[in-house]
Structures are given as C-alpha cells and as structure tokens.
Image (cartoon, rainbow, N blue to C red):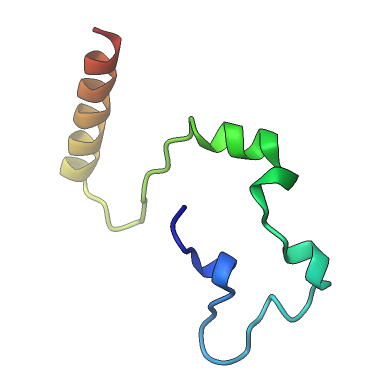
Length: 74
C-alpha cells in the first residue's frame, strides 16, 4: 500500500490537524480492523475530477472507461 498522507499523518504546515483531535486508537488504520472496507476498495474506481474539465476531457475519460470495460469483458 502506498504511504498516504493520512497513514503517515502528514498535514499542511505543522498543525497535524485533524490528527490532534482524535484519540490515538481512532487513527489506527490497520487493514485487519476493516476487512470489508479493504475488500470493497479492491473494486473501486476513483477518478480525479474538477470544475476545469472541458467537454473534450469528459469525452476522453468516457471513451477510455468504455474501452477498458470492453477489453475486460472480452
């Protein structure tokens, strides 16, 4: 698994917010504690998205998702 900011508790600046708000046991992200979540994450597709995408970006993304599904199913 990649070393994500939440796992290493990296934050903007030195505040360590929101990690300083919670009890330490709340921030334990051991996959063994969340087996169904980890299983679900194996089948999730996350797409970056923002308000600056233009129609050609959407067409490109849609086309490539369609092609990928077609290749996976054939």
